[in-house]
Amino acid sequence: MPRIVGIAFNKKGRVYNFDPVDFGLQINDTVIVETEKGQQFGTVATAVVDESLNKNMELKNVIRIANKNDYKKHMKNMSDVDKAVIKCNELIEQYGLEMKI
Image: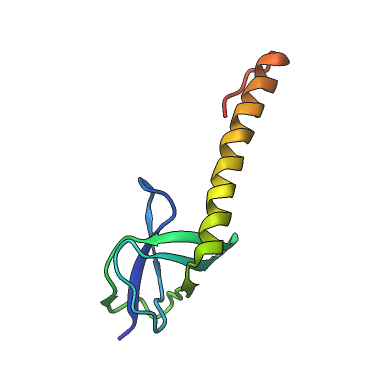
C-alpha cells in the first residue's frame, strides 16, 4: 500500500499529496519536493499515512528535508516577491494601468 504525506506551500494554501520516500517526516517539518514547476520549499501539513490510491495516480517525491540553505533561499524568495509586488503596484499607478496584482 502506498504511503502519502500532505505538503503545503503556504500557510493557508491547498495541501498536495507526495510520496514521503523513506524520510521520517513529522507535521511542520520543512521539505524540498519536486513539482511541475520544479523544486519547491514546502511544509508537512499531514502525517504520513498508508492509503489506497487510484492505480493511475502517480505521486511526486519528497526530495529531501530542507536544510538551512534551503530555508535562507526560501526567505529571500519571499522577500523578493514582496518587493516585486510593491514595484509592480508603483508602475501600475505611474502608467495609469487598469490592473491589479
